[in-house]
Image (cartoon, rainbow, N blue to C red; front, side, top):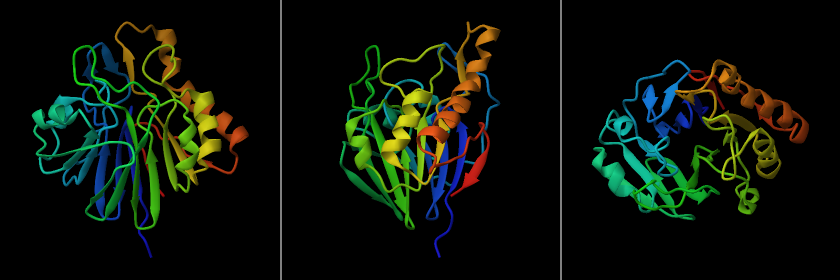
Length: 250
């Protein structure tokens, strides 16, 4: 009988996934301050050793954070969109593997497939260029989709057959535009993906330092709105809203 997968939401797009005896960390941002952003949730730092794999969805500063990567075990395998390997290697991770859409890696007992994302992925303003990716992590009969940061895209419906979808539902500002899922589009994504369980990510963590107190509602409202809309549009999907620091088993 396969073991349950254990998922811990550490905030923003950082999730610790324990599956098939392996530990995977996504888009690690472990700092309290990131450029003009300040962490508004409590910082969560579970033990990160051992760590088998680090998945980087794209090269934006709030998803590829070198200072956070330097805090990770150097023997973890890092998976990054083609073009971003140099940045990750400079942060001290020795085994860096660049991937493109459709490529599959076997890491220990996990199968990791790079899938499309509709989001600009370059390192602005003068950094390397790379496409944004999502990943499907499979092991012990379970399939977990980590969307990274994305908008709706036609190929999303083909990902399918998922036990868990980790879907972004907001960002860090007071508004959100193209290239991102907001609560409405994230609920529509559930109708395309049809996972057994869904967890909203990319919310409730960072806000600009100049954000006013009236904007604090944006730390909680996107996930609540997503859950409400998902119950209407995809009632067969089980929603689990995790606060930063909370965990669940699938």
